[in-house]
Every structure is written in structure tokens, then in C-alpha cells.
Length: 459
Image 1 (cartoon, rainbow, N blue to C red):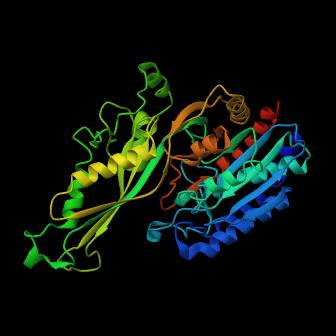
Image 2: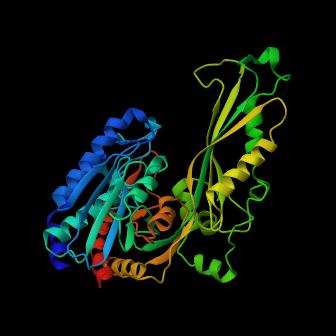
Image 3: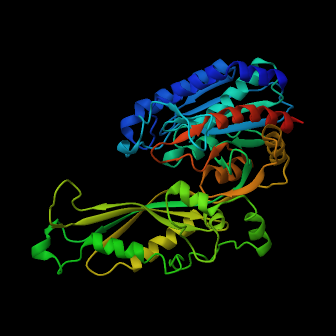
């Protein structure tokens, strides 16, 4: 891999500028106002794959946003790596909380990133991490050191549920045949402490609506006599946790896989400073389910959170109304052996049951996925572990990721493929938040490491 590594060093500035070009496109998949930008971003991903040397590159239409496919088959008898990533991004709102424009990448020095970090929406999730694979492939291909076959499947709907990825995979099983899926959409513990996620939580995401009177009412005339949907919704949401922050939904924990004391001890060996954690978030103390550590709460325990709540008058000044409706978006992170279908059904039944008389409640499921645990004794995991040990100088620690990548379980069920979650971001990189960023160290470290994974996996 010496030639590939030299190629990477010689082209570092160009690799960064090309990433900036990709980041500048506001490919927000959840908002139809950005549909043209999402399509433009897909075309640019395809263009980069072609220039890197991929064959059969295609921008594949779906019922929603397109999926970009490309491949390089150097010998059908060699192993094949299927690289998955996504080019769509979260909305940038609230814009006024960004220090710099969200779609104009800006490099700034930070305490965590002394070599500089790229501040922009999508810099880490997932354009920066996805693009590492394109550039690592280019380095191997241009130096004739690609050791096995590679296929790319880069989608544009990960941030809004990947609803068309499953149908695409099922319709293209032969085209997508591979030996492993390689994904960089996760994080490491720290830049001096590499890690590999060997598990992800599942997700049930839904929206609730509480309706009271048939119109907004004068709060002086009707207040105290008619149920206020905002008051009712607030009480209903508050009742979903008890005094120990245990979730109160009937049967919620029925299928939760409880870790043994040995497993819990091993999980908590990962480096973690609660004081640094609180300092980074500017909070006085951690908060969560009683009886569990922060590492356990964010990796192996299920959760329920209100992600947004609205209703009534929120404009400038005052308007004394008793609103007709109130809404909330709620997400639940799931662990083995919970399923999205089970938890969505249990939440819906429970939420309807606790609604008081005087209001009507509707629960609308959005998207989600099942939890997944990936083996740490596989050839693919060892290939990733050895690659990171070579570039970081330390053996990576296996960890459980708190986030969800629902398609990982789908790859296993529909394509029969396991995945390796070899990410290079940091949890502190403000993913989904204002001022999202991605360290230059991390971007280049990923490009440097990926070729070694290919080399190890081929061997």
C-alpha cells in the first residue's frame, strides 16, 4: 500500500477541495424544497466515482431520491467489499445558531481538533465519511494496488428513513452480491483512542397529535372548562417515564436483552470521563435511567425521547388562546431483542390508553429499524481492527453505538450480508446540530486506513 499512501499524501489538498464542493450542495432529503439539490448532489457523487475509476456508474432512480451505484471488479474470484454511505444531510435549522453558514465549509481550530475541523452540515454525517471511501478507492485504483473487488451504493434518503433502499436492494440482489458491507457512519472514542462499533440500537420514530375543541378558543372564556391539548400532551409525555427514568409503557422491556455483569464490566472499560462529558455539553450532571452508567445508557439500554413539541401561538407578543391541537415527535432507541414493530405497537396502545376524556389522540409512525449486533470474531472485523491498529498505533476497542443505522439489519435480512462499522468521527462533532464539524485529522485518517482494510480483507 505504499504507492496508495503516497498518492493520498500528494493529493490531500485536492481531496479536501472536492469534499468542499460536495458539502456546498444543500442535499436535505427530508424537505422537498431541496429536491433539485439532492439530485444535483447525486450527480456529483457519480462524477467523483467515475473520475476515481469506477465502472458501470449509475444514478439509479427510486420512488424518492436516487441511489448512486458504481463498481470495480478486478477479478470475480476475489472477495468483494460493498461500500455503503449516504450523501443526504439533516436540515440545517436553526440557522441562527450556526457560527458560520451551514453549507459553506469553514476550517477552524478547536481544542478537540488542533489540526482544524471542517464546520458545515454533512461534514461528518455522512459526506465526509462517505467521501473517504471514494478517495481511498481512487488512491488504490490509480496506483494499481486495489487488492479486491469493490462496489459502491450511496443513497440519498438515510436522514429521512431510507424507505427506498430496501426495494432497491431486493430488486438488485445479484448486482449487490458481496462478501461484506463496509460502512463509515459511526465514531471513534477519541482521536487517540480508536474504536469500532459492534452494535447499534434500533429506532421507532413517530408523531403524535392531540386534538381538543374544533377551533382555537379564547383562554379567558373557555380556560378551565375545556381540555387544553398542549397541557394534556405535556402530561402524557411526562408520564412516559417514572421517577427513576424508567419507561412506563406496558411491556416495553419484555424482550430487552439484559447484559451479564461480566459484559457490563467489559463495556465500561472504555475510556470515559464524566466531568469532560459534562464540560463539553455545558451541563452540571448526567441524567438517565437509574442503575446504569452513561456508557450503558447510551449504548445498551433502550430510551424514549421527545424530539419536538408544538401547538398554539408561538409568534411574537401574546395571543391568549386555548389551542385546538398539539403535536410532538417521539423517538425510541431499541436494543436486542426489541423490534420496531413491537415497540411502535406497544407505544400506540399505551398512548391511546392514557389519553383523558375530552381529547382525541392520533399516533402516526414514521420510520425506524431494528437493533443489530455485529460479530467481533469475523475476518472482516479483524481486517478493520488490524487496519486501525496500523494507522492509529493502537488496537481499537469494540464499542456499542447509541445511534441507529436501520439499514444494517436490512442488509443482513435482505442481502445476507454482515457489516463492519468502521467510522472515524467523534460524538462531539455536533451531528444533527448547529455547527456540525469533522476533523481534518479524522478525514485523512479514514482515507489512510481504508486501503489497509481492503488489503487485510483480501488476504
